[in-house]
Each structure stands twice: as structure tokens, then as C-alpha cells.
Image (tube, rainbow, N blue to C red):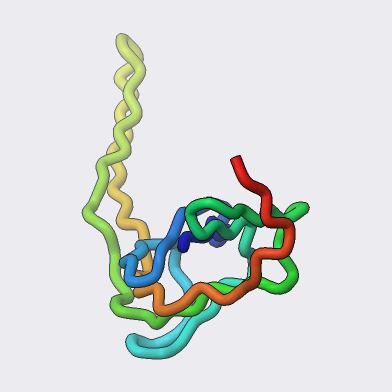
Length: 111
């Protein structure tokens, strides 16, 4: 069984037991978290698609890590103008372990 969730302006395909790195979410390590914006649920042969979200579905997990990603270099350069700007950036993230996918398949669309 898998689901497609929306968080941080991005969509993720998740299964139970997946480790997911998403945009920074509030909470401490070990605390429970639930994703209510579930766009789709499938059990392999039956699919339930929301318009745009499913009202009866929820994905639950717990926070494994709060951290910052590796540094990236942002370098701006204009040739022949003596213009150079160098910045670094580290994006904050939250690592979430998916515990369960709750929801029932009501449409039972098969492909």
C-alpha cells in the first residue's frame, strides 16, 4: 500500500517504513506527526484519487532527525564587469519515518 502526500509545496510517494526527508517541520525528535493532505492511496490494484485531497485519509509517522543539508555554493558572475558574489546556503530538513497509512479505498478504480 502506498500514498501520495503533499507537504512543503512538494509531493511525495510514501509506503509504510519509508524514511522521508521533507522541508523543515515543527517538532522534536521522536514526536508523532501526521500528514492530512493525502492526494492518492493505492493498494497495488485499487486506487483512490482525491479531488484535490482525500478527506478520509491520513499518513502518520514520527520525526527521526531535524537537521541541515550539505552546503551549496551560490555564485553570481558577470563577465567583463568585475561583478562576483559568493554565498553559501544550507537548507533545513526534517527526516520522518512513515508508520502507517490510514484510509479506505472507496472508488476502487482498477487499471
